[in-house]
Length: 415
Image 1 (cartoon, rainbow, N blue to C red):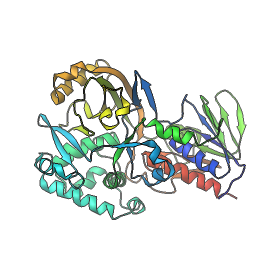
Image 2: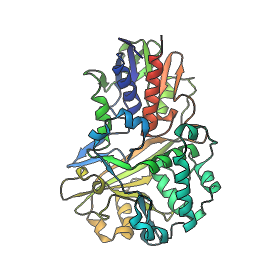
Image 3: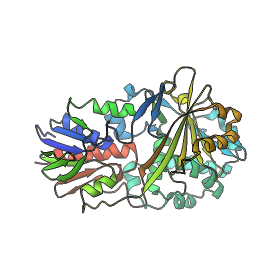
Image 4: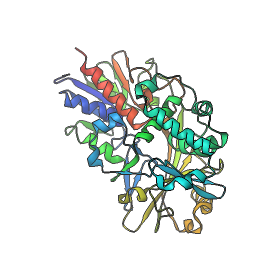
């Protein structure tokens, strides 16, 4: 494919827009990306605060992602893996639930943990085996129901669903009701089974920086909000109008529905999350693992000592703790309430933690109801304008990259 000299205007500098622009540029086109904020990356950014690296909300990169793994220079990201499993706070203590096929040393502790029955744990192993036998394309063609309905059909007990799956997938889907598409569940479960959840050694924002570095100087214009799009150009908030042979809208779903009305997109439901970061002199866990709230009550959904996974997230001798609270709870006294809740998990040492920052992310993840995602080409083409983003394939890093790459391929296929 070649598009030598073709001018393509891309509204939105998140992962979908960057992936699209990188592929276009490699093929000889001249993409120009307009990002409304002061940095590219959308929801995938990392800030430095007091020597700590703070991602914009707790995120992980699944190293089994096929398209992202091909597009990115994985080696340079220096991915640091989590242990395959979780600690689940239940009945007053943290219980270990591990993938015993990959971590057989914890077989007995996992088998005896009162988080689901032995039969439930065998069903997890069977599900893992089954999903390794099918392709992502086959998953995308399956019947789609809610994840809760899917797990019930698979025979999992109410306790396993309530104690483990609601907390673990609450951290992925950012909702504990498990109303998200079962295709999305199967896709993510397959990725977890075939690889590792990881963190780039220098923060999730390193993914963005790598993609942005592949574009020529001046190809990304920051602080430039697009207010109108047409098939032959765009208008910026400043009033400036620019002409282009092709226009791509790679914004979030809400903005895309406003910029390209009638394209089949609509105002989506969004899952929100509040992420609190704390600094500590010592880690409360001392291992690269996530801790989940299996009680079904309280504010906290999951806890991770990020620097246990990737030490570069914190200055030497310090620990960085990330706490995810689903939704946008009343901010008044939130830090104190979260710390008081976690005293039951980790003891009185939590009162020595120093609060670094709280991120309240209203549009954290577009909700993916059954029969919404993983269908169609992964982008839309309406009145000569292309629309792409994770909301058009799967609400994930892989989904954003797939959508951006497929949009670029469609543009390159134009005569």
